Image (cartoon, rainbow, N blue to C red):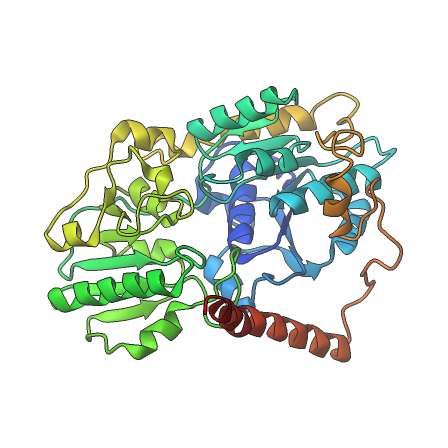
Length: 448
């Protein structure tokens, strides 16, 4: 008699941008209850979890192109408001819920879910975390995420810092669970290819000013002219009009129009892993792509041309051995990463990546098997501990101080009609026009 097929775990992921959907969906596959297995196996429809995706409606809701670029399959995927999502969580049953949102969004959902699940004897294990390195607003972001059953830390260093923050304010730190970035992988670098390829991984908001972005673009084009035998690629996150996790006011696509780059210089989009498959040198200011590259042991440079500054995020790489300038690169310098630094960053280039999520899976299995079910969610912030902060965070998602939807909160029991769709597209277009065209003009006028 054939063995019975094990029940596939059901996981819901709520995300508010393309990057967070990528992190949340891949994390869902990595932490799905059951035996440890390779990413490819977990993504197989017959082996991995049943994955339902929810995209929180807002300025950065991913476009179909951005979703295709992420390349993670979901059994269902729909756009929702916060109130619509909370309703869905009362109507459907899941084993795990991954909140892949900005900190304020996580906090609002934790309070909304606590209220929505009031009186229930069972609920999903709630998981949250960060999409990359944490180099700013450490305490603020962490406390907004407190209350989830698991707060994932992408490295040993982050796990230590997370626990210190929680314990320092008297909050329970048991939720902090060390994992690794879920999108690491790919073939290890085996040496220079026939056509040496340099990739600059651009970021939407770093650096911010036209002067600095133009400088970096000019240096990249100069490098292509100096090395006609090389292929020089500018890897972009989004196309004009699309938004990512961060707002991009000055897209490189527009800045490059004033230049006359050589034939060996190109703009590229697509999955970062596929671009790294042909990369011989990865250059960035502070993109998480640097960690993906280091994981594969691809030569990686974090630029110091604009300084090593917290506002740029490249201060995170102090001690990595990867800091260098364009002048040094043009002169032939190739950095050698510090192995101890790399091992503390969740890069796990030593081959232990497959086991990096075992602790999270074990913790989830333990919680799912807890006699009597799970207790109510208990965030650190409450109307008592943060009466001047919490209500505003909840109100942005149309929730009252106790997590109850406010009267008139946007919600719908059916798909939006044609008029509503047109209005929504127009509103997004106006917002993007304001960010990319009007706001920079106003700032320049203010500098006169």
